[in-house]
Structures are given as C-alpha cells and as structure tokens.
Image (cartoon, rainbow, N blue to C red; front, side, top):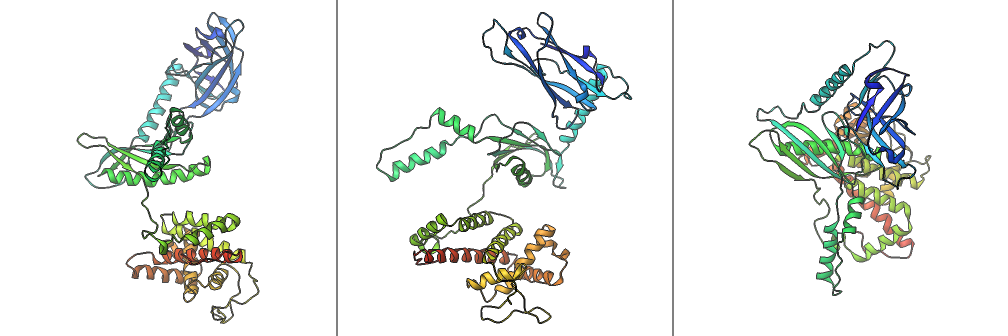
Amino acid sequence: MKVLFNNDGASVVQGALCPLRITASSASHFSQLQVEIASAGVKNASSALGFGTQPRIIAPDTYEVDVNTALLRRGFYEIRLIRFHSPAKNHPDPENADYTPSRDFDRAVFFVGCIFDSPRSREQVVAELEKREASFEAEFTSGIRISDSPDSISWSSFVFVKCLLLGRRTRFHKFEVFPFDRGLDSKDHRDLVNDFLKKATTTGLKFEYSDADRHISRHDNPVAIVHFPNVIAPTDSEVAQFTERQISKLLSVLALTRDSKGEAFEIVVCPLVAGRDASVFPVRQPYRGNLVKGEISGEHAETLESYVRVVDTNPFEYFLLQLYKEAIGEIDDDFRCLRLWQILELIAASRNYDKKLDLVDHLGVPIKMNDGQPFKVRNSVPPVYAVLRDYSVDVEKAWENVNIWFGFRSAVAHYGAVANYGQLERPEVRAWVKNGLDQNAAANGHNVVVSQLQTDVNQLLQKRLADHALLDGRSVTGVM
C-alpha cells in the first residue's frame, strides 16, 4: 500500500485543500473511505482531524480525497489511520479494511504552516520531525535519580494496574501509562469456592471455570501498565517503593478523570546493567484490623445482627460506615485524620444544635473562651464536642482531643500536612497542634492523636447503631 499526501509536498500553508492519494489493491471492494490525522512531533500525539467520504477513483486501485488544512493548527501531522468500509455494489459483505503507518505503509507526515513560514521539502519535514521525536525520547529515558549513592545504577520498572481501562498510551515526565490487551481472570476465586464446597459441605458441588468465564472475567477486569524506563537507585526495592508512591498519585488523578479505581498489584524491576537480577514485588496492603478473634473482639453475633439490620434501614448510618471504612483504609495518618474528622462534622450537622445555646461540658458547666464568655454551639469545634458529650465518648478528655483534632485537620486541609501547622493563622489553633505533636513525641513517635480519634469515632458510630437498634425494639447485648 502507498499513501501520498499533497503530491509528496510535505509542507502546506494552512487553509489549503490538499489531495491525499492512496493505492490499495483491495479497496475496490468498498465505497467509502475514512481518514484519521494525528498530531506529530509532540510528546503525546492526539487526533487532530477525522473525516469520511466517497473517494475519487484516479486509476485502478488508486483513490484520492481532499484534506482541508483550514481545520488544522500550525504544526506537524501524520496519517494515523486509513479505513475502507461500506461494501461496493456486486461485492459480498467484507469486513472493514484498516491500514496504519509502519505496519501497512510508510509514515505519511506533513507540516501545516502559515504564509510566513518558509516552504519545507519532505526531507526537511522528516528530519525536523525525527529530531523532535529523538529529543522527546532522550528526555523520557534520561532517568529519575532518587538516590545520590555511588552504588546507584539504572533500573526499568513496570507497574501492573488492575481495574483500569485505557485506550491509548500517555507519556508524562519520564514515565508512561498504556493499556494491555488482556485483563485478569478470576480462576482463584472459583477455586476457593470449590475448595470450600469440598471441605465444608456435603453437596459434592464443583463449578468448572470455562473459557467463557475466563473471557468475561478478563474483559471485566482490564489491566494497564505504568512504565518507568530509567530510575537511578542502588537497589531494586528502592525503585519499587518509589514507583509505588508515584503510581498512587497517578491513580488518584485517573480516578477523577476515568471514574475508575485502579489498583497496582505487581511491580517488576529490571536492571539496565549486566550482573544484576530482575525482581517482582507484589503490591498488597497487610491486614491492619483487629488481630484478636472472638466475641469480645468484634464478632458478637447478636450485636452484628442488630447492626446489619440498622444499616439496612438507615441510609445515613450506612453512609457513615462507608466513610469510616474508607478512613481506616487510609495509610497516611494526616489524611486519615481528615477523613475521620469529616465523619464527626457530618454527625454534628445532623444533630441540628441550636447555635444560640451556650456550650456546656458533661457536668453542665459552661466552657468559656479566653475572654470569659461561653462558647456557643456553632462553628467547627463546639458542635463536634457536643456530639461526643451527648454520646458519652471519652468525655473527660473530649474538649482537649477535639481541639487537637481540629488543629490537625486544619493544617492538613489548608497547608497539606500537620507538619505545616506553623502556617496556621490563629495562635490558639497552633498551640493545640503543638500539644498533640508533643503527645506523639512522648509516645516514641506513635501517632496517639489519630489513634484516639479513630477509637472515639468507632465508639461513637457503634453507640449510634446501638441507639437505633433500641429505638427499633432490638436490644444490643454488647457494644464491640
């Protein structure tokens, strides 16, 4: 197949109507032609112009259409796809015939300029385009140095991501993401089901995992690859840790733009020098829940049953539990604090406290400001304190805790991290954060502040569920 743009004139003035000539032996079977033109000489090529038409027949097996360059901006372009479709008369129903550069024809590139641009020969256009592409490739593979150690070498890393459907390759600063042509299957899930049926039942059941099951599973669980071509570090484990951190940021962005919660599951790290072995690192979060089993550790049957009934009929409580589930899954303490505080604020808002009332403690004593005036049940801290007071959650330390949590939350929300609390405007809020950080330091760096926040939110949610169960006439024999 041969593709000729503008009679091999690779430089055109924007607005010109340029002929695109195509020679293809099988084209006579079709009556319609589709052309896709993409940008070239840029880091991420994208579709620039697409159109379909009935081509002019110039000679046997030779066809021509016009490309309207008025629809293209100044820059480099190439023919990305040529598709013949719609069967011609007296021909059977053939499938579409798709042709792409490199595979089916030499790259057809051209430059669209303005009247002030000097004309370029095809050789000049190709040379300038190849120079640009080489520059992008050199920058892409130049390496990300994550260590100044003299023992550092270059490594290539591939991060495998499940539940992420992509349709194109995208390059970023020294890494890229692209789709893979098959997804994950769920044979292990079926094997576990069959293992259970064999060991724990007398049904004699065993379900086969068919080719159709495999096809559906792979289709429903798409996989994408994130590639870091050159990471400079002493060890493969450092490369794996770095790429895992980077992929977390990328997946957060893709969750927003793709509405897809991609999850990394394997990282392959390959040395780019001889004498070192490649490694694979599974990406998995260790179990972080209760390690103690039994009724006293969250498995009290009657309590669980009553809670399930409550959330089945109370959408708001179910929503709060979903938020809690997401919060405890957050690895970063700062952002876990932010998520947990959000739960407290939502509950406080749902209580609809009278903002004109004075704030009192669990003994009925007003809590006063520095000027001696009592706080009102409004703004952020007082309503949250009132919630803990009303549900009798850690009431002796609740006022101190709530102020520290609010300080942590404010530092993270406004300045990205608790460590940046010095930028907070109000000195009393900074003082509360300092108090909390001193507590963490006294606990040998363990974040007792966020741990206490999680404990109190847990107790609060359980007490709310227990109250709902009592109101619905279902007693709860023990709060877990």
